[in-house]
Structure formats: C-alpha cells, structure tokens
Image (tube, rainbow, N blue to C red; front, top):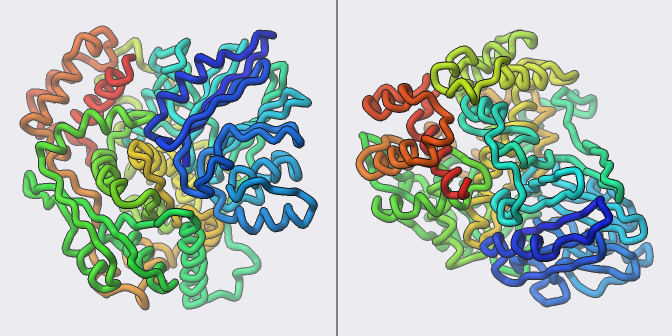
Length: 593
C-alpha cells in the first residue's frame, strides 16, 4: 500500500524528475516508510512506500528489473502473490525479494497486460518497457486503488491522488461543469473518468491503458460481470446460495490476512464488519484487534453504536478499542479530513474514518473493513422499490429514490455560467442501465452501483481516509469473486428482510441474533449532520470567502437562503445542502484552487 506517481513525455524532451519528486513528496502520508525516484529518458517514476509485505529494502520501489527491461511502481496488494510466485518459478523466473511487487513485474513480463486477469487483490500500477517505450497503467476491478491522470498532448502525468498532480503544477483547475452536475445529482460524487477539475481524469476501474511512445493510447476493460443468472447455478436453492456466500466471503476474509504485519478490523457493530470478525474467529484468529468510533449525540441523534460493537467484541473475545471523539476534536480535525480527500466527498463517514484511522494507525498498519456490502448485496433503501419494477422502468424508480435534484431544479442552485443545458447525469444513468445483460431492474441498478457509483464513494472514502495516516484498508466484500457470485444471485434472495437477506442468512450461524436482525445503521456524526454552532461557522466561512465569491459556483440568493434557514436545507434524499455546497468550497480552497 503506497503512493505512486510519474510522467511520460511524447515531445522528445526528458521527463521532469523534479515534478515527479514534488508529486511523490505530496503523498508522504500514504507511504511514510520510504521514497524512491527513477528516470530514463522520457519517463520518470516516483513512489512512497508503506511496508506491509517484505519489509526489507529489496522490495523498495520504483522496482527495476534490468534483465527484463521493466520498471514498475505499484500501489495495493496482490493477495495471491505467493501462488503466482510459485507458478512463475515453475516457468523459470528467479526472484530477489519476497514482495508482491516483484511478482507483478514478473507476471507482466510473462503474460503482458493480461496479467491483471490473474491478480486477486487491489491495485493500481504503472509498468514501463524500455525496449518499446510503452507505458502501461492499470487499476483493479472494483477501483479500490485510485489512479489520477493529467495530460496536455506533450506529456502525461499520473499519481495516486489528485492533490499530488496539483503539486506537480500545470493542471487546468477550472471547474468541469459536467462533473459539477454529477456532484449536485449523485450525493456529491463524480463517477467515471471525470473529476470536479477540468484538467484531471481518473483511470476507470477494471481498465488497462496502454500508452505508446508517440502518445497514442488504448483502453481495455478486462472485467464486467453480466449480473444475470448463470447455468452453473440453476440447481441451487436458497440454502445452497447461503452456503456459497458464506464460503466465498470466508475465503475473501482469509485472503486479506496476507501481510507481514498484524491485521485488525474496523468494527462498527453493523452486520458487515461484525461478520468479518466472526469469519476471522472461525479461521482461528487469536488476539484480534478491533476498533470502534463514536461521537457525542446532537439534534436527537445518537453518535455511536458501541452497544453492538461491544456485543460482538465480547462474543469473540477481541482486543477491542472503543474510541469516543470529543466535538472539539471533530471540529479541529475537519479541515485535515477535507485536505485528505482526493475529491470532495460529502459523506459524514469521511471525517469519522479520518479520525478513526488516526487512532487505529497507532496500533496496526492493516485493517479489514465492511465497505461495499450494501452495494453488492442490496442493502440500501432504494433497492427494495425496484423489486416490482419492469426492467425498462428502472431509471425512473432509481432517479426518484437516489437523485438529490432533478435536472430542472439545478438552474436555481448553480450559477448560470456553470450550468449545462442537458441532463448529463440522467444520461449517464440511462446509458448504464440500458446496457445488455442484467435481467431485472434490480440487477441493472446493482450493476450500476457496483461498477460506477461504489468506486467513487465508499471505496474512495476508505482509501483516502486510511491512507492519510499510513493505514492500509482492505475490503473483503469487494473481492471480485464474491462480487461475481452476488451478481449471479437471484434478486429476491438479496431483498429478503429489507435487503442483504442472503448475507444475513449466511451470518446467522456466526453472529448473535441482535446483530443480524438489528435495524440498518449508518456511521453517525451528529454534529456535522445538523450543522450548528462552530460547524455552521466553518461552512458559512467557506461559502462566503473571497475565493468562493470569485468562483461563483452557486446562485448567491440560494446560498443566502440556506444560511438563513438551515432547517429547510435538506433534499428529499436526506442530503444537507449547506454541507454539500460548503464541503465543495472547503475542498477547493484547501487545495489552493
């Protein structure tokens, strides 16, 4: 788990190692254990290292293999690296380290860019071939590891974080109006390739980008589950599906224990993190460290779920850390959490994860977390209404349940110069829902959530907030083989009991009933949810700052109305508009944009 960066030039000039050095230094928190730079004519690569597998200097990056003519930088973990190493040894490859990075280099030499199909893990990497001058960029199937790119025709730069690209300079920081439309529509996330800045794009998940020495490039999407019923599952009944989910999840949890350092669990007390603890207990793990966070109540909302996390910790005898955050620390930590975001993320979970990760990093370097279960197993409130909807009506139901604002309402919120005429966000959803495959409306929406929305909300949140403290977060519910199984599972089994039914059934033999059948909870941060006192002051200051006035993203009268009447600032989907608008400005100002 690390941070990577690089530049490749197409104009005959050498790469700027100074720029790559600045980008690398900007990711110090992602890799506090080491730093490296490498250059060769038109290419320069940089890396910050967090030592998880092979703690020796032999695993340092950038990793060059002169015999193979390859140099690589890699962020993530290949959970099956040991199996791949033995396979490659059988084909004559010799290894100088015990790292998964070297396995990646040898695998790339043996199988080319198709090596990604053999990887079980989370990864973003860049591999440069000296013989051809070709650069290959790749990202894991679920987009767990980020990769941002910026180019101007003469060169391409890339990095694990957007702020690192900004540190390199020469980035177009104008606001992308299409991305702003997405931000205002999709709970503040910008899916796909775009970011809120016009000059920065993301490499999409499950994508390999091959960049030739002349600057031409091509993308290959190497994973795209159909979300249909498969012939090999025809004879399975509900009990068979329950057992299959149990076994696949147990394998995913076991995979994510691969490390040369201790691995803990972020235990919220919800079903998802609790079943991870249960699976680890089932695997015979002892002295497991678990961590829960809570905040003080506000506005009638509870600020913790310690009742449930304590129950699970006691049941399995974990070494449990209960962390209560004072409001004063929440307030002072908010700017740091915003600065740690590669893109503005409105979820309250971000601040909670940032503070939790700060504490957890004092004890362990790797944690498993329950993110992704709701998208994979249909746990959100907008999934059950899709059960009786014809496939062709999926868009209308999803938009009604999920969109914050219909397109026509944005004219009263976004300033005219930042508006787009067409409903670009609606078109993105229609296009994805209309793709072949996905037999039912729910299948189509779950495919949309898993392939498009999930990488740019909970997945990004975990990566950004944990890595801000040199902590590696692993998400077993995003194991690609588990996701493939869930995608093929009959929709009605997922919707039982209001959602995640098949996961609940797979958990019953492992967890106390109170945990399995409890109402769905969310990571509560009441002080931010209710935006009052000093938290309101922070938002007001951001929205009325000179930089915000000069940018003029939002209708002035609309913002003034929100500030005067905070109680009417929520959308029908529950998003607090003051927080949504204020967070965007806080992020832009924190990045110096």
